[in-house]
Length: 23
Image 1 (cartoon, rainbow, N blue to C red):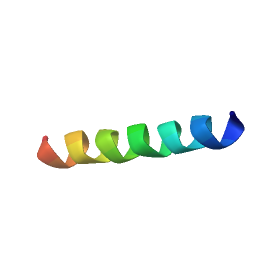
Image 2 (tube, one colour):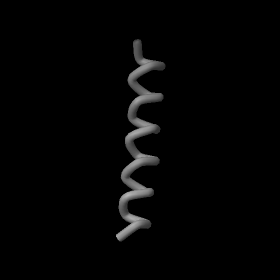
Image 3 (cartoon, one colour):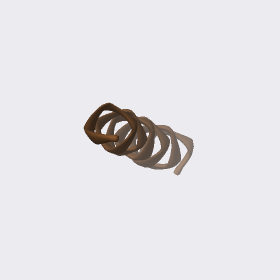
């Protein structure tokens, strides 16, 4: 469970970075 949660967090962080880069 922790592994899945960590992966989800990593993916979210990557998406946030992409959104920030777009702006």
